[in-house]
Image 1 (cartoon, helix red, strand yellow):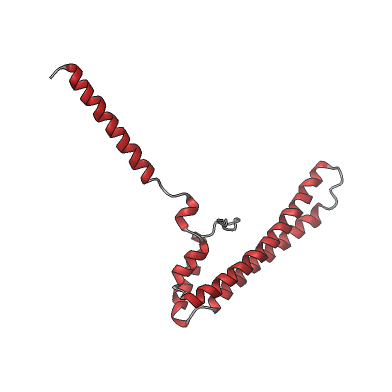
Image 2 (cartoon, helix red, strand yellow):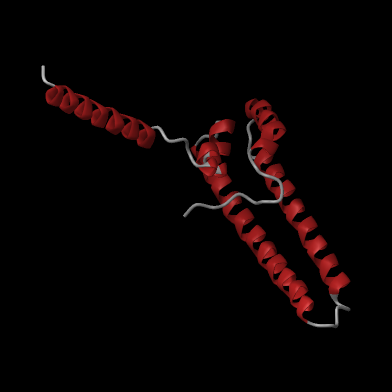
Length: 153
């Protein structure tokens, strides 16, 4: 076997090995952090083993919850914009009142979240309560602190 033939076989072998590695990396890439958990609504339905009727009730609760939280988050964003706009001027007399409003809105958001999960518990059947209790004890792992889950479109 000549050196040229041996080098040709080695080059082709290395190219095939590279293509195999690239294919493996593309097909087995780790999921995006948001994909790893899945959609929160879908996760709740799966973990609590909701039937079709419960899933429909849950979806209604979820739409209402999203609408309410979106309104509060929009109001919070607007208030924060007003607060940061004060940095452009010398008059910062409204600073404390705007910060208090943001705190009240954050409290309102937490109350909405708590009520949402109370409503979810209300649609659980007695045999699902253990699953619900297990889920809420692990909930901190699903929702990062300070960030509402992002909604996929």
